[in-house]
Length: 316
Ligand SMILES: [Zn+2]
Ligand SMILES: [Zn+2]
Ligand SMILES: [Zn+2]
Image (cartoon, rainbow, N blue to C red):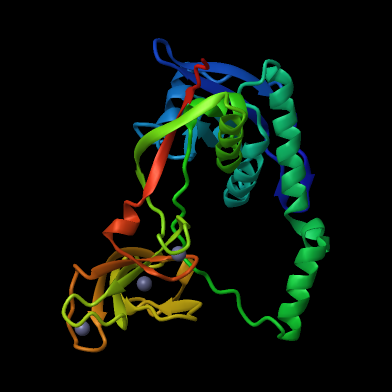
């Protein structure tokens, strides 16, 4: 029951909820559609999938009835039971899309869980097969790539310095930016008052908190650095060295001579090698730049922002 096949895509079997009680441990909640309840042993397994301190948002675990992917917003955990052979990476992406729309503190949790199940189903439909390709923005992107107007989509690796207020989530929802905005609104209304709490990264030139990381040679400070990777070949299980430059789709294993897709390579070690002076070093100089204006951030920038805690404002 509860499975819908659409092409080669299978919609999850069920969604479960678990929450953590500091005294009692994991408490197994409801499921939608009604399914055999999780045992408390399975609930512990799912929680362990998020690390010992529940530090990862997405967890994978195997329980009696199959593979589950879970989303953790402590103390709550939303668990999706997969059908065998299902595209788990796609479910993970859609679970992350779904999370901000869930009210983890809803007083009608059964309804919320039902809504979450249908929401996930809708997201999977919208982001796969025909519906994905009929999405007007996607259509334009694919059209521009076909005609060569857009040749490639290259990444910029930005470290997001997100501020999160966990105590406020159960009242104001899960969107970190929106929670911060609401707290500032409440300060404007003189309901809350902010006080200093720690320091945060903030570029002194433009005020942004996003970072880019750059490596430089520790000897000559050149940024022209090659990376020599030690990688694991999934085809023959041997290790080999490779210099992985940009624009590669696959590399050939030196042992079994088979091509391996770059997104399937497991990197075991990396040794930076300077192209300018030839120094090989595992301890390159690490430079932070502002992702918005490009300024190189020094210690003062990294410590310049003031973290804020909020308190109820006692009037009078
Ligand atoms: Zn190989
Ligand atoms: Zn050098
Ligand atoms: Zn900046």
